[in-house]
Image (cartoon, rainbow, N blue to C red):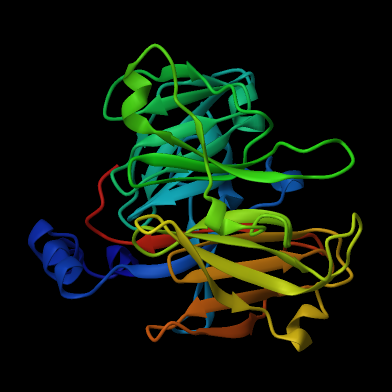
Length: 341
């Protein structure tokens, strides 16, 4: 809000509720790709706290200052429409206590959720849906928060550590490895949030005979929330079913949750995949029609954008802001002026 230091009248007009409502309803939210800071940068100085985002439409990087938040060791982890969620330390609290903060970096409004122990921030995955329901999920337990003043805790009892869990359509989806120490076997698990009010949780394995070997053709699969009622599953496409099979490219599959049918959404071009083929692991993040790929020593991001006709466009994103040679993690942030924490 540069107008804040230019003219009081402009500042009053541009920050008025009527003007914000007008421009928020005239245009859709600005869809940005936000980077999570590397683990070694968790303890940056308060004045340097910022969120780096990429605008795919303008092909440029932006920086949102977060120093207005009165917290130490800020670490952005997730988003909901118009809001970002960050772990942070209260100024006068020990590091053993962490707080999850919901914040609109455009209006600088924020809300502090009930305090949690540091173990949740270290080992838990933060999931947020479009209605600002929040879950912190681990292998053994989960916390759920929805417009109340306390966290609801319940047992997870998953067969293994959940990989790339997502929260959508009032349900949580996660991949779990149910195989042996020598060979992975991935399964898709689901839990309906309505079951959290009961004394037990109801995780169940989502599978169909018609799916065949859909989980066996991908190496190190991940989930990404797709458009509408669709889930994206992404991983390296194995060249064979042998134990240490190499991969020929990165494949994107799409699951329609109404029809429970899989289809191919896209595969990375061979020329682009050569930059990832030497990395044993790569990171994936995104939402809706955008998926980003990162790997160690690649130095840039690969972006896949789904087109309306059903195909997809692949391109590189250069100019990563100060991440070193490590892989990037992130999330999609839909910037909006009228979102309230």
